[in-house]
Each structure stands twice: as structure tokens, then as C-alpha cells.
Amino acid sequence: MSYFTSAEEVYLYLGGVFREANTHPEVGPVLKASGITLRLDYTGPDSSITVLMKEPEIVVIEGDSDLEPDVRLAMSADNGNKFWRGEYNVAVGLAKGQVKAKGPVTQILKLVPLTKPLFPVYRELVGKKDAGN
Image 1: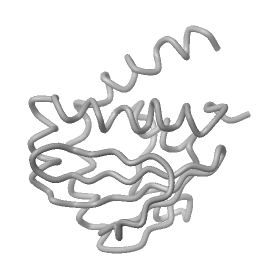
Image 2: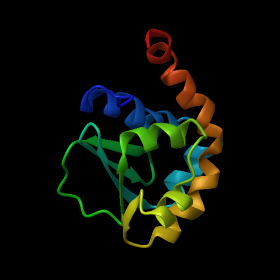
Image 3: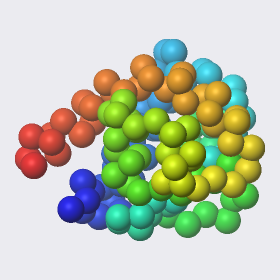
Image 4: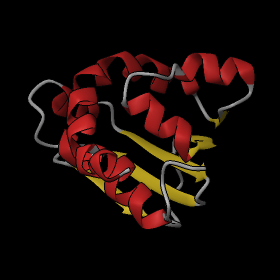
């Protein structure tokens, strides 16, 4: 069974961690400086998040968007959840075909290690959900 029961939960938690990044003293400035537009397409449940990592703030768009992303990643929402818990390696997922990518993936892979300080933020976000499961 999937960790998330609806697209709304995906937006709340997987989108929420990017919203939290806006005010994170370490990660926020780095992501904003990257200038990357990232689209994440999830399955189980089907959902899409577009993240504009640009100054002056990170913007999260839930659902379909007409914006053309620099990088597009597709994976299960469960793997997205595992990533933000620090339990899933995106580079290994790409190699195994569990994560599909379009665009200059190296841009995102450079940012992945820098997101590590957000793992406790994500675990706090999903804490109430975990307590109820």
C-alpha cells in the first residue's frame, strides 16, 4: 500500500518540504540561486509538482502546469517520501530505472546532497501522519 492516500497528501508533504526550504538558512539560498525549474511527476497517487527555484522565493505549483521545466523527474510518490527521509538515493534510482529523467539531470544531482539539511524538516512534516499510521 502506498504511503500517500491522495494527491493532496503528496502536495502537502512533498510540496511542503520545498515550501519549507524557502526559509531554511542553508538550503533556501542555494536552491533559489540555482535558477532551476523542476517538475516532479509522481505515481501512487498520480500527482505533479512544479518547483521554481529562483529568486526571490521558491514557488511550488501543485498539479499540471504549462511551465516548461529545465528538468523533469518521474518516480513513485513512495520513493519521493523515502528520499526526503534520507532513505533513497536518486542517482541509484536513475541507474535502476526507478526514476525517469528529462533534461540536464546533472543540475539536479548537484543539488541533491545540499538538500540533506531538509530531511529532519520533512520528517517533522510527516510526523503527525506517521503517528496516525
